Length: 563
Ligand SMILES: Nc1nc2c(ncn2[C@@H]2O[C@H](COP(=O)(O)OP(=O)(O)OP(=O)(O)O)[C@@H](O)[C@H]2O)c(=O)[nH]1
Picture (cartoon, rainbow, N blue to C red):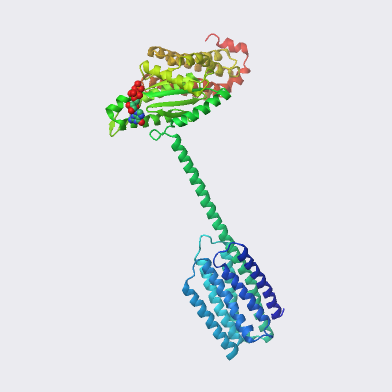
């Protein structure tokens, strides 16, 4: 390919590059500096075009102006990089103008006064490589946050071009003279091809740089938006919390109570579930306030709020109804179980020691009234009123106690039996006479203890007697059950016996704690009835029920009926 054809190909490529840059400039979002790059590639196209008319037009146009335009392209690439990176200073423009003017002057000298092609090539190489090196330096050393493959791509293209220019300097200065004229032209043609190819890569790098910066800014905006949304959500939650929380105790406020009560009441009526309302009022709180001051009273209210939040289940709703009165909504439980649990809370309140201004305040107590939503309740307020009646009765009967609304209490009697029947449904029966009989015995014990707790004034001696009986029955049952398991060769016997041992140990410790006054009876009952009996049968005993099926019935009865 001769020189003219090469230049023509170069012009086509430069033209395509100019068009893609100009389209990007006009139709896309571009950053400062992109305009210089577009103008630069236009200079390159015009310069190359002038080369093409070397034989038709004057030397001023085809050599001096053409080379000035090509150098202007290199200078504009550098300026674009600096502006794009916000690294351009006014004195840089002076350097550029001085360089361009000196280049023009020297080129005129080497074209018109002392024509010297070799010197012109060398001059162009020196000026262009200097400006390209400057651009590479900026590209690789001042890395902004959006630095990416586009920057590296442009830097690599320029590095390649600088290296090619250095080789061209060596070639033009030292080897060209040794070669015949035809080969000299071919050698220079190789450098022109490299220049043409690099133009495309440079333009590609510039477009990628711009696109990556857009993407980076888009991510920033998106992050900003996400932060805004998260902040707004947080503020909304805060605002919501403020509107539903009591600032002193951190408990829910009366407004939330009204909302929740209505919601839970409707849910309960729709699904037929259970719903218990409890009203708690601190005893003689006025006297407390009068003796120790309002601030001390506040400290007590805060401590009570904290204790309640930690003592009840997550799904229970605890609200400050007003003053020192607290209302609780307990769902999915029976009146009997709720009463036992709240009795534990009442006991815990009597053990609560509050410090205020380095002084321990005297013990506090609370009265609690309880009512369950029943079919007679047409609105949430009726059940609330019945809980209030129960609370009033607790106050009347001497305070520091729990009262269950009388109507509800009668209604809940069958539910206590249901609790027992539920555990002993057919699918939970082992089929072994002795084991089933003893399980029934343990449930009866637990039930009797529950009845005693719910009694208005449980007799301590009676509770202790029942506890002794319950412990005896539990130990005897575990012993007998282990004998049965030995007889049937149950493979999990050892693990099962270890569980028995651990349950007995824990029960003994808890009974002792209860007798020493450091554990509420409700907590003890919860362990004995739930952990040691119900949970143990459902989770552990049922594992050997299948083995009992293969054991002859006569043997089952004969072996153990006399024990
Ligand atoms: N410190 C403090 N006291 C409060 C607050 N709200 C109400 N109280 C006080 O709580 C006391 C309630 O007193 P009463 O309703 O007469 O009842 P009591 O003294 O607790 O007596 P009984 O309820 O009959 O056992 C009043 O002295 C109120 O001033 C509060 O936010 N902080």
